[in-house]
Length: 258
Image (cartoon, rainbow, N blue to C red; front, top):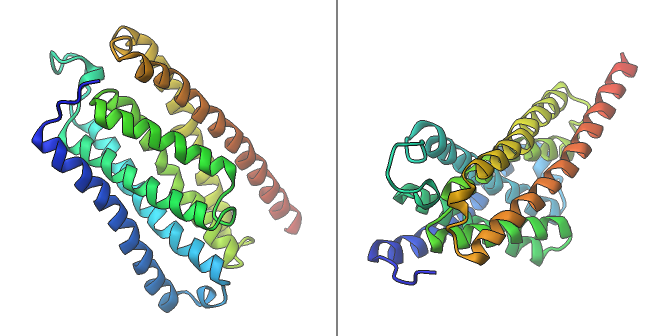
């Protein structure tokens, strides 16, 4: 591991991580203010429900930001395009990718702190495991300057988070029988299939085809890349099965009420 970090990295990393934490705090407060004024259901919630409502506000904001930045870096820019640079793909990075990883690390730190503070109200052991693995992977990728392409692929899967949060909002607001709940559930199912199942399959195929580059990472980083993503993939498959069963149950109830 190379400890000779540039001056830009020494400034950018802590600033971006701190910015991620501040972003969560600001969006949390904005969500509280907007919800108390615009949603009647918000005032009827318990204290813990209001905390989770606001928490899901900054969760959604980060998800949109992370998915948009990842999509730009992976698809629109030529940063990771084959043949676009003499630099090995596994070693490619940019100021934007460094910044996004730092902001995401700040988000996961903030969310983990709240999960542990109110455990298990905001999420059980599976959330702690998911966030722990995510922070571990992002931290190593950031300080090593390697495998940004793979971390960004995983971050793009955050695109499903807004649908998860909208589902919770509608359920908590007593709108579980509404058409919006059903449409959001179908969007969640399709989004999860694309961003957390098919994308992970592509992830493993891509890593296999570029394994000669993966092998250049020092042992701990290489072994982490070979173990953490499969663990996340298994969690995604488990949650996908639960989403599928929930969607089918909701659609079945809707048909019987007609």
